[in-house]
Image 1: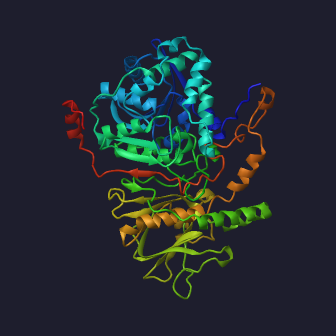
Image 2 (image 1 turned 90 degrees about the vertical axis):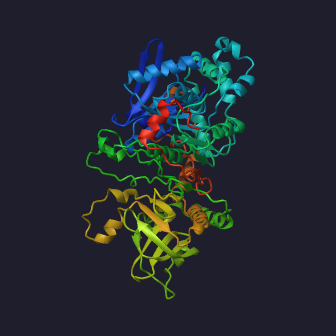
Image 3 (image 1 turned 45 degrees about the horizontal axis):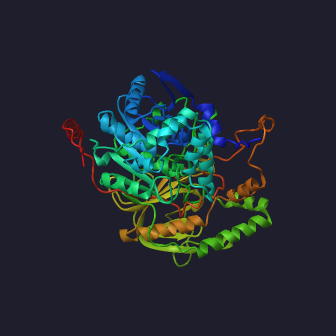
Length: 591
């Protein structure tokens, strides 16, 4: 009997919360999800040849919780690109949607460009991921394309699946492949034939009137089914487009790297003027995997549904507003030493093996989420370190300033990056200082865009964990401590901006030393379990909420410190609305 792969827990929950729509428009059947405030211009997600509307479930939940509207579609059964244009236009008309922003991956990105070329007034911006400009190379690789309509289903599936790289994969990429393979199994023979023909019918994208500044190109840098030369061709066509390069992610980064993808989708939407409406979120289930929380500190709580939101009295804080970084570098060309990191992981593994229960109890005591006041100085004026935890200073940055949340920049001080935490001590006030453990830093990045912040800085996003649920009634917490416990962002501003990249590399190194203390135990437990279900009888009565980890979280420690993404954005700014409208009316191609 054929094995049935268990569904990811967060996908099961997604299906229980988000309705699937099915409509007929003429002879075309449309299957789609539409979630988020209807007052917001939608982001429409178009999948590749192996995808369905379901593959974007992580984007639907994360972005809708930020106040964006996301529509994810299945490709309808159309047999040429002109038929696609007419069918998609009628679909938008049926939803009463006149202007859209499109996120297209692989074939979906190609179809998005084709639609933008022929219906320029309807497409306001594009995000293209692992996509291409023309199909000649695919047509040449499939000489039997003329008989696709007569080929059996198993042959079409096999051809599509051979385009997906066969392992070994990192666990989170393997999970994404498993999910997509499962989606391919749901497609009918006609669905498969239609997609293959769209992918091999010889065509190319002509000039589009959309300015490059309204296009973001998001690619993975490890491997994907689209040849590198086609991706380079796309970049050459849109030289002024924003560029986002994910160091890893494979063919399906929206599943394997959802936090990074969600972050840059949100940045793109902000850039092109889409205003989120979180005030219209009533009735939408909470998603606790924030749209941009890359677990750079090993904090693997992202991409989990916050089931406590079913309690109407609950008021979780998902981690503050995302920042529009603009020009960023989330990686450094400078190699990060690995010897210290490996030793730290080995020590942690030995402790886990000796007494996992006591290790978890101790880790829970030691792990302090949120920003803490710090004034414990040693005789030399530096921070007093935790000798019992073998804490060591990895970097000292003099003349560094700090900004907490939306507060003004503090006066100059000294920044200490240790193997456990980040500590800032004021140079002018002996009792003033702050510390934050690396386990509570869910994302750190280099920000150089003056529109995001006036000075180049290291931006850090703070995960409040369960502390975000607590009220302010505790008598044991001072007013200052209570305020600090609510802050979800920090910026570290060095006196010398040229030190940002090397400082960021040290952040990555220390984040690597501080994975989620629960992740290793969970990984061991998973390895002992059989992840396959062999019969319908076994599937009955299973707790599908906890049967499998969400995609991208199968091993808890994703090594995000080394697999962070790079975003290179030039300084070209958007034209004002009047110039943009005139530009479109003249029919200029914007290149």
